Length: 243
Image 1 (tube, rainbow, N blue to C red):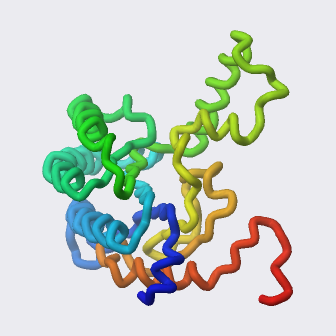
Image 2: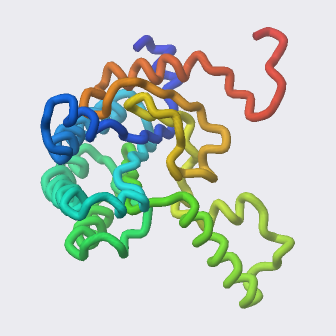
């Protein structure tokens, strides 16, 4: 990428990592093999994102709907997650990357919950890129939970209903303090949001690629950034006459 392109690197990139199962099926392998290969792409994309200047990277790792998958697949995914946290968090920390998790972590196994808490504490003072894993995450549940918190505050007289605006609502989401994504990438050719950051994606740019997630690497990330730099982000305003 040129210096100009690098200067226009999106601040916050969110990725819906899709296609692990299809990658495995094409090769006659069990689905868990696709998830293992997909974990390699996670490492590549985290490294590339930090190198290219991304400040926030959110990876949709396990949705609230994914709990409906076969028990053996869910168990394998939790095992992969545990091994990833044990093996990678020290390297993330050494590279000044801050680690955060959003989602209903209480549904996760207790050992995973402990690993997440330990990882967040270890990296909380880091000042480099922030890596956010969306685990056991569903945007509708997040929005409903924010509404509950605000309703409780209103009932206690801590906030007046007329004072509730977009900023107040956003401050009660799990992403409070994190800028909304500039760019959303979805791999594998699917073109839907899948209950991901519904509030936060109001003005995000979307980029869809047919590349299956286990094949996704720095080259694919750069192509997404190049396409992003062609977009005219007007946020509802009228484009200037000079364009």
